[in-house]
Image (cartoon, rainbow, N blue to C red; front, side, top):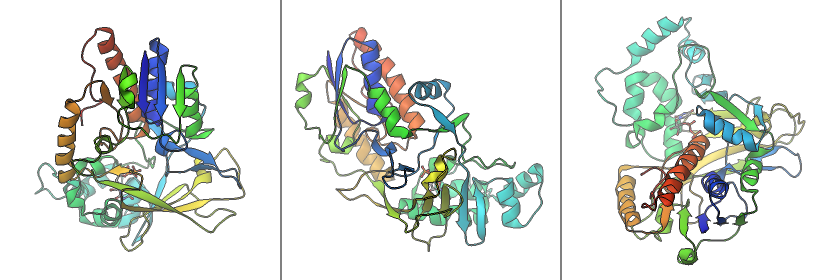
Length: 382
Ligand code: UDP
């Protein structure tokens, strides 16, 4: 059997490995960029040796033990806890919102219970089930915290009013009434010692997997294969015939600092609308076990995605969801193809979700294949 996979990010790589480990088959992966690992791609800087997150910060975290065990088969992880600082009009605070943030922001000395009661009193009770990002914020944390930490950043990040965004975007971030300033609430967290590209290389290191980089998928080449697994953007698969799905792209400005400690932390968010960038990052802090006198820093800017830009964040506005459903209908008319991953299902996914879904999908797909049933069309139906 011969399978064709489009895309050598985590989706394509994990699926390829699952197929060759479980079936007697050969897999060809076509990757249009000149490297593997998609937007997780990391590369050591030529001049400083610092591991750079080429497409923005990636901190591996998950609560799925099977996913944590899976990635640890292919890489050694260093201990890392993401602790973000946020610059607001009132000063610099710790993010996610936690007891220190609340006490410092309001100049109080609240205990956990007192803070909980206080923040609840700030919330807008007149809002029932929040229908968007802004309502979610106003209902649970109130106007002052929302304006300081979320309104400006979100407007810059997404290029629209937060009322147009789903509440689920804000639900990614916890609010804590203790001094835990870990950005994530997941059980496992770390950064691979040799970066993410090395993990994907290890996953793909199998004699029955062939990868062609700088090779664009052209519709029709799948005719020679038993099945096509597509992890690129779903609208591109159909030549954008129903229009483009909205994405934000990110550009990076390398700062003119080369030595010492620029900002004392890997990530600093800039929450004010008047500051053009969303965050700044100093990549050497992602590997605190490495010691570097040199440094490399970037500012990140979020922009609307043009036809030549890389898609990063799916916007999923109401009009995008309508267009998406029409693409799903087109997909349902296809035979011999399945769609998986962040771009093919047009969803805001973290690395661990992508890996978990690729593993789960591979089991469902192989079961259907073994039983000569219809192949599952999507990793998760969008
Ligand atoms: N967000 C914000 N202010 C911040 C950090 C996050 O308003 O300082 C909002 C913003 O809308 C963002 C969302 O919360 O898109 C989710 O943040 P997360 O850190 O999960 O985004 P990512 O790391 O995926 O860019």
